[in-house]
Length: 96
Image (cartoon, rainbow, N blue to C red; front, side, top):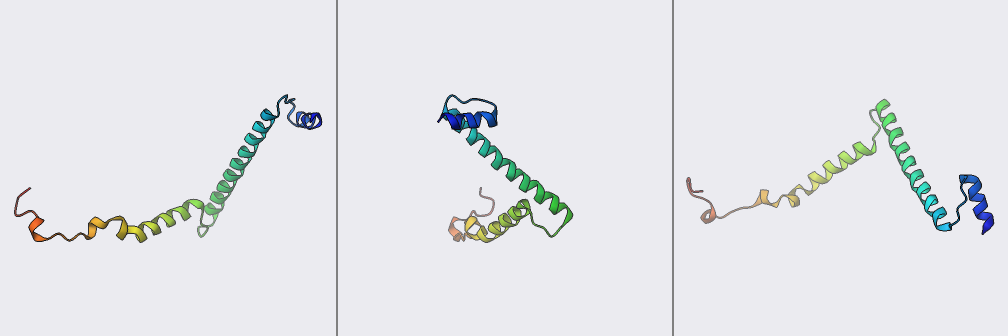
């Protein structure tokens, strides 16, 4: 595929002698593009949240979700809060 290699060398300005390197750099570009779009989405949300107090960002949604899960799971998460001990196993007076 000499034609494809010439095509990419015109775009990148580099002639790839090996397709493996070409694919590696394309994969890096796709990952970089994904991270860039994700960062853009996050920043645009933060800008909108600064203007509109009713707007929920990923950050505030995450806080609300964590608080809700924490409240919902409290009974299962902290069973030691509901333990009932018989009198004979409790310490008497100042016994440590």
